[in-house]
Length: 484
Picture 1 (tube, one colour):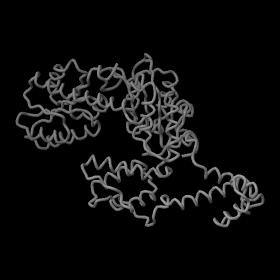
Picture 2 (spheres, helix red, strand yellow):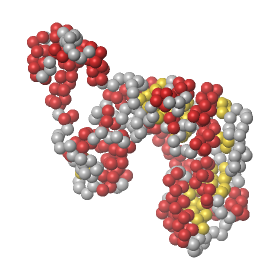
Picture 3 (cartoon, helix red, strand yellow):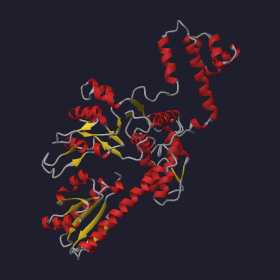
Picture 4 (cartoon, one colour):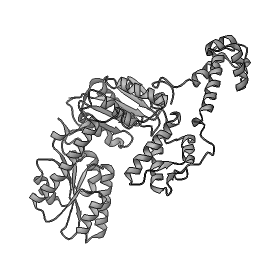
């Protein structure tokens, strides 16, 4: 069943129990839940409502009003797409306006008029529905299959080819890479390019949900399974029926849940918490982690049998520091994007900013780059963004990657060294590999200050070490292999 055809979810935050019951009766045709404001954040996480009807109280109690506005802000932080209708006393217009200023969709003044309130709530739900339809349309008509993934480096080209190959299959995929490298974007690309693209994509961050809640979030629960379980609730795995489940930070999953997840993946059935009847499941599993799972398996923190189930195909996502040329490309794209977002004049990058971007190691990867660009767009005062605007130091030298002569010389020297290593110092063989004559090879050795003797059979460096040097110098090819 599509999202548009499902009953919309409404959460009612009302401390007056009698009024809360009256409101629940008004919206009985919706999937409605109600609770006191003290339980609001847990309820939002649990029910993921399309809309929230929130009684802010009265402006005559400033402390209570301030708490209500702070709670509204926290709800929108947790679920920014949820539509909030702020309900207030008739004399609290300023409080209602403040709520809208924080992000509430609409407001309603008491006393209760069921007809009018119903119109207000259903208008908010319609806005939510239109936004979802617009999002689905953008997904279907996106210009790029790997939307949001930019790169000109060899490693990123290899990565995109691997995603395009594995996406149409049913294989489980494990994405390995540092934080901030864009693993969720790749998971979404795998979903869009698969035969499941018209079904849900459900993402769960295993590190963001407390261990005590993660089991019920994943597997669902039966009515009465624990305190507060007022009705049967499907888990995330069930809600992804026919689609894709993305388990981010899978390395943080508690061992007790790993065993249960293994059974679900093997048998494609799930038993809700407190239940005994297996529920059949159909989903494609994509996992991601920035942890070294081999180390976790070695110390007993991660099950090896689960690892084999979730990693039928493993794809390593390269860090930004290993994506030569991509940091500048991404910086220019993000600069234009955030200039438009904040209504700033489109700025360029000053020469010192270009040098700094290329020289910096980017330990926080693309996430850090976007954060620095965003801050620079907001704070820059000149016509261009400088290194200092981004909080970076100017390395001082012109970027060598833009100097074609330097690039050619480096590539030439690397090719000579590689040929000598493969030929074990045999100059005739090395010249043959390079496609040049012996006199030309002698010229190249002198030009680049290379001592051919160090590559000979009797050199102090072992042949294995020389071979390792060649492998390390080769451009990355197999993104599914290698270490962290």
